[in-house]
Amino acid sequence: AESVQFSFSTPPPTVVNTYPTNEPQPLEPTFFISFNQRINPRSVINHIDVTAEGHPLEIQLATEDQIAANKDLSSLISNINEGRWLAFRAKSPLPADSSININIGSGTPSAEGPLVSKNAQSYNFYTYAPLEIIEHGCSWHDDQCRPLMPFNIEFNNPIDASTYDESMLQISPDLPGATVNIFGNHIQISGSSKGQTTYRITIDGDISDIFGQTLGKTKQIKFKVGTSEPYLVGPDEKFITLDPSSKQPALSLYTINYNKLDVKIYAVQPSDWPEFMTYLEQYQRTDKAVEPPGDLVRDEVQNLEIATDELTEINIEFANLIDNNYGHFIIIAKPHRTIFEEEKYWETIQTWVQVTQIGLDVITDHTEMIVWASNLNDGSPISGASITSDIDSINATTDQDGTAKFDLPANSASYLLASVASDLVMLPRSTYFWDEGGWHKRPVTDALRWFVF
Image (cartoon, rainbow, N blue to C red; front, side, top):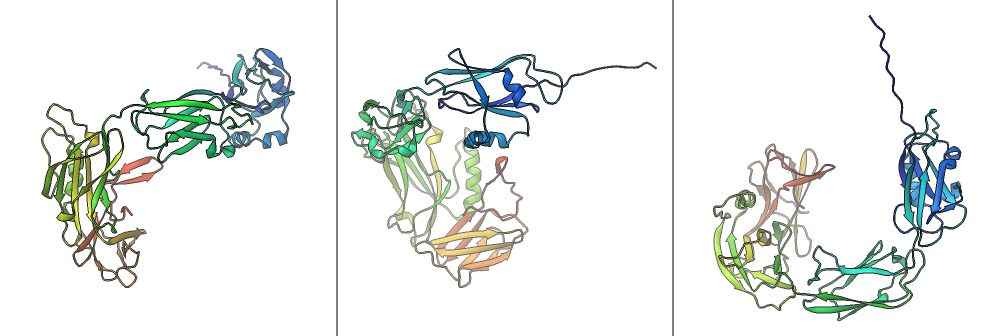
């Protein structure tokens, strides 16, 4: 019955992105500003003021060649709608070691409508200073340097990796396995550092930054490495195959400052694999003692004769438990602790280890699976290998080129097996898969087409 009237406004020009960023910059940079709508660069530049340490600078629009010469700027422009940006430069080089402020004043016009910006918008960066070392220390969270921690040297400007030579860094005493990584304004040095040792690193004065400046003088800095917290590490995987060329099969672990390990070894069969996976999911979720599947064939405390504060490889040997040089075992190793010491669950190594001479690979499409059996020592194909799994529908034999092809089974399987005489190799189904959303656990109803290989 009555007329209704309402109104709204579309937004005025607003800054969306700027360049350069707030890190050391050269003296003749190309400035860049993008907006939320189309603008007329020749009109907008009249509303921009640039100062160096408070002193005004004259600016002008950048040429196409100047824009194309800057890869970072070209990349920014390629991702912005046409007409929504401008690029400009100072008419003379900027002063070094100075704070540069860019102010986009109120009243900045749009090319899309009559409204202008109501508020000033600004950003800043700084030009490079003479190259110097500003800080050094170890690269992890702890303030103290401990064995194996990387040494980190921080400069005020990005280092030019293309002109770096390994002779520019001298390390004393020797750091076994030393590697040098340069990223941005950091140099990181990794190696097998020893505890309770002071390392002196000499940096040559010729080391240079991306602006062509050198350090000028040789510098020496110290890293005092203290004692290490004890720790134990092992394989990243829960299922591994040992090197077939090894004469004495053993699982390699690495430790610092532990002198005893609790070691349990279970003899298992591939049919125990699903129960082992369930055990890994459940053993930390209950206060009750949970045992893995298989027969316990070793339960002992292993004494370690190792040097203090040095990473040492130790071997869990089980050659005397293997029949005919083949077998499957679950190995559980953890630091030996008294009843008064807290157990660190992340230092418990639990791994399924198989000893075999057979390599097993699988390739699938939507309908078929090809299995390839080969000799792990020399890669030659194995013919006559029996291919089975934990479901009855898979039963094949490899031909002269070591392959067997068959239709994908309708039911899900936990693993594939290949056997030659008494040698039995297992290839588990992969538990996780990757897509754009990250890692996901596969439903147990998935068809047999996902394997680790």
